[in-house]
Image (cartoon, rainbow, N blue to C red):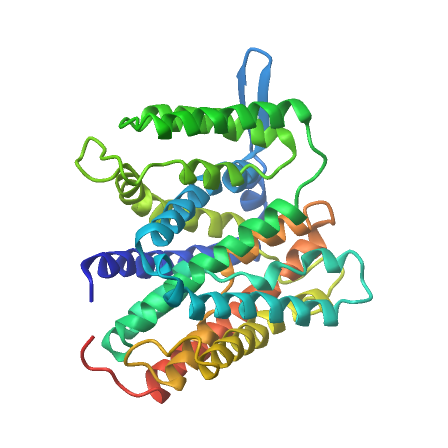
Length: 391
């Protein structure tokens, strides 16, 4: 197995364990005498003021709008690298994960819409089960070790990256509120600065990051979700220019923040967003929203990913990953139903103004669907797909 893949899986496995631990801790806090302290911590006001510029948000939104912008920056770096030099650089290799990603986003959304067709507020959450959590999914694969071939792990990573593209586009087009023309203009001017820095082949990281911070503030004030600034910044980080360490600047940045994202930002996000009270205000834990999300993740993901991959393979447009069989493919399709991080994030946007009851039931659906998908995928790959003793 390539050293880069081993290193990535090590981070993803550790992040998966921490994500699970932080999610469980949040649920414990939300359903114990600590609930008031938990809510008070997340509601703590944090303000930054520079002259007339004022950014005042509760701690929860600093995590979701600020720290998650760094997560999306890392996603963007991975995406650009994969497209230019990785598995997605070859059009032929892109066919299978692209088909899986499309099916894996379409079917969960359709299942959710079918269950919630009569509730206009609930329909705002149609995209929640369409996302895959790469950290959890790759973490489960890492736990299986040599029982699964390396090619399956590469396929899942590629599919998850493409899934992230879909999630980013969904956030940009469907969860953007009223726009501020001035802020949009400032953000666009920062994009122009990034373009100039890229064309001038600037080797220092600082000019990119300072421009990115200004762009993040402008996007935050514009009405477009601020995390998208992280993706835009990543697209202008050069791969052909070596940084001070001698590595390409993009690779240097990706490696420098990978540990922080995997071991700090994502677990902190999980702790801040997974705390759901098991006694909601309306007394319903499993209503059409939670059932739609759980069914979308558990049934929609595995059906959509496997079916679309099966079709392109049967049409001769792609082939199974090397040393993989149909059971491997079905097992990894089930793992794609782990939607934890991105699903929670999209849920926070979908029901931001709908009230706490909506937030509670959407988290129940995400946790249920993700947990069942993890168990099924692990079980198939552990006991049903056959052993691979050497990868």
